[in-house]
Length: 233
Image (tube, rainbow, N blue to C red; front, side, top):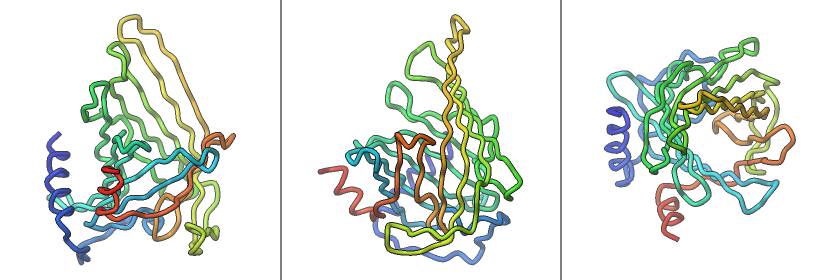
């Protein structure tokens, strides 16, 4: 949990009003880096609304940090209530996941065990595989969480927040959750297919299940101050 302790310190500093700073050492070998979230030391909060159910929202808090291992982009996911669900720490150079944090049944942040670390394909030929293990919300449950992703189509014009046209990549995602009872060893599997759209200069702008029962679209981007006001409303 040392890495997440560093995050908390950096978050406090960022929340005190520091301005974004360009870092001349910033680099990435990933060919799709421009479609990922921009690196910025000042947190930004993406508000996604479920257009299949207008009352449902999801928030992603995104910020960049630098340590002895290089640059990272952290993506924290929050429910509509403002409760944190999980967080991913991406290495900026390769966009591999170096940390996955989940909130356990006691509402405490815990570090998942990474099994596979790739979530962002390097080419339209590659299928990435991410997998992690963590405790479920029941004392007896262990969850094995997998996501396989490949490019469905790229270089597609996309209107971000109905205001700005950007090039985008559509990813086809297959997610599998295996819930295992640690006492009986009985397993239950839940799988879903979905589409994730990443736009140039923004990152994730839309995601939906294949049947579109859940269909989230980026509605607005909040500042840290606006986010604090939202949490205390």
